[in-house]
Image 1 (tube, rainbow, N blue to C red):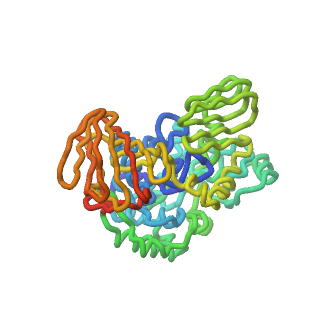
Image 2 (cartoon, rainbow, N blue to C red; image 1 turned 45 degrees about the vertical axis):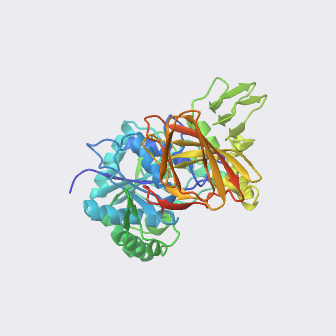
Image 3 (tube, rainbow, N blue to C red; image 1 turned 135 degrees about the vertical axis):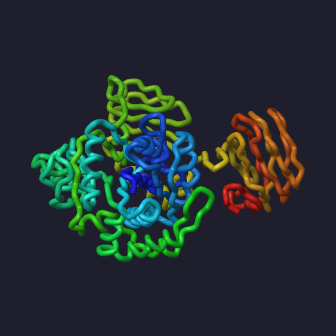
Length: 475
């Protein structure tokens, strides 16, 4: 068995508290909220030390498989495997499935560092020492969680009570505490001996599976069977849906850590945030002289203690204090920054209305393994999109029953196949794809292909696609 720690990165969450940027189709772990790369990519970078870590195992929703592959490739970092969850079942079965897979791949004595992919973490000597202490305890059979020294009375986190201090190494856990109200949080902060429950773990793969079999047998059976009957799909491992779906929808804290006698906590004191709300993003961001943080094209005048984020339009804010203004290309959220936790309630209101439910699910820009597209304009019987195709990539060979399309090349070179005939187009050239034709778009060049697509027809939904051949396994 290698002494290398196996990182297990949980990347399947669908958080909505960072709406309108974070949505079901592209949640917060794949967004660049602090820094130049996404939170998922930052997590990959934290375990990119071949003297300490094996290549990571990522477990994610099947819908995010190509985003995971693309963002890892952007960093030129190799993954050991990407496990695909067929449906959401919380962290207990996700970690159990990862443990079963790691045990089969690296041996049951392998040590796993389980990391959420959507946290902002500062790497310092304290962090490195905490990893070493936790790994030592895990090799001796403990199941270790990391507890963050609180910096303020926080009601959005669970707590761990322990007679310990940062730097002590792994210590016994006295109690787990649910998310408190403000009064209780203030009491715990004053008392000391309480730590934020970070959701990060150091576990022996075999030790965790044995405890899971004893304390959460339904989770254990579902996880083990989903790995045993998993199928390979391109570079991914699809966990068996019939088996996985039998697992209870329960967190690893409830299922294992609050019951096991093997649990210990490693107290730490490094920079950390789960970035669970826009005020958390504001706290983690650099600020100007008026205590404002901003991203994108922003102008502020007489504004203080605020966060303004835009990925499209130029946003100008004047004469306000304590506001969050978040502008995507199809929705804008404005609210009190200090009450940013209420975004989740707003998302529920939007989701309940058919007219706005789509705003919680998808962005105007949708990403695909070959590139993606943005919706520009839609009307009765027509739709205009901007398509972008990566160098060397091609869309599926497909046809539509209800629409015809016109393609105009804006940049790059396109190989267009229509009913077996290939035509090469360059900038400012166009082509017509009649209703029902079998067609394919490919980028043979070395720069990104960009084109405008005009769709016309009786039905323009994305489900009007009959795939005949596809290099990404979507037929």
